[in-house]
Length: 154
Image (cartoon, rainbow, N blue to C red; front, top):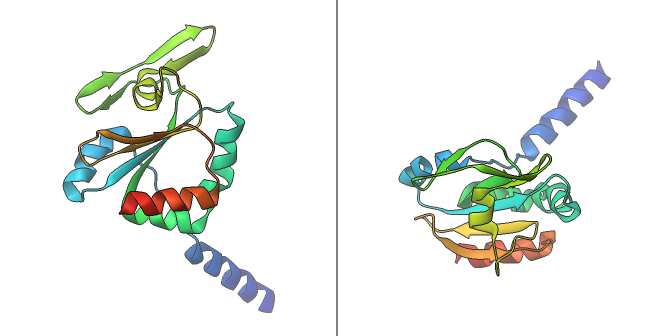
């Protein structure tokens, strides 16, 4: 009986003590902005990018970052090789194949291109009108991302 109580107690603490990062879809942003104006942070990544996967497993698992993103921003986790059509900002974006099972989504190019190229991972910050106000295309550690979030909240 004591073991059962300890197991329930442990899972109760871990499930209430940690919340998950809420990720929105591009199609939801306009209606979310009507409810509450916030900046949108778009994390553009691929499955094969080591630094993208590292950010997902470290930076975006940090509880302080999760809490800040969930409370102060809209967050979109966007795979640049997504194959579905996406409607965003009164435009329709499609996947553009560039070879055998290789390609990139037009929206990833639109939001993630810096100096005429896209390098993953990319963080793109949009204002309340879905205009790009910041782009960054390198790995961000947990501490550096916290600093960035603090500056974006100002």
